[in-house]
Image 1 (tube, rainbow, N blue to C red):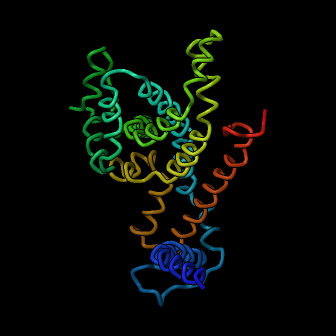
Image 2 (image 1 turned 135 degrees about the vertical axis):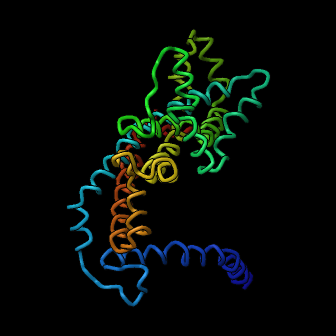
Length: 297
């Protein structure tokens, strides 16, 4: 009887979360799946939904902008995810050192990640400005003529990747927590055996933070394939669709052209792509992720 009361109390406590999951996550997902097989101009009302079978998916695979947005997103993800992980690990290692003022430096590196993405994007628009931007001004000190970063299709995507390094504070904090879980006695044993700083890093630090790398890698893949805000604010897909990210194209289809069925089909293709990459990383984790207490030698 007591257990029954306890169960009911537990269900009541999770009821708000459960309702939120059903109303705001599962419900929209099911509706989106239905729309992906339908044609619906969102401004004409729900009664105009028309079932069209696989027509949306057939049209997508003949759409050149679909392939362009896929290409931009893949390039961004394949370059930015490894780059951000390496940069985050190196900065976290530096911030893990014991020296005076380290708390201040940790705060400095973390602060950009709490600034709203729109405000950050507006700031970087000014930094990348070819006429008065601080970046080209700094390059000019070395006699280098900076390009028109966001107006040149050859540089716009690279500029967004470079800008992404500004917001790696969250990832750095997670790596920092992983580094602080590495036992000090292992480093002391390494020093006694004559291992240098690089040997200790590659033989002790990296293996022991592989669970943290695994987590950040999955989050990075999901974030990389869903990149949107900065591209929307800074370039809106231009110039010449060189920064037309997949999510931006999906947004344009849904809320500019009001073709919600086509946009829903795009969203499910993106879901499958992210799911495949996530499963690939999870399946590969048994070969490179080390957990303390594993039975493996």
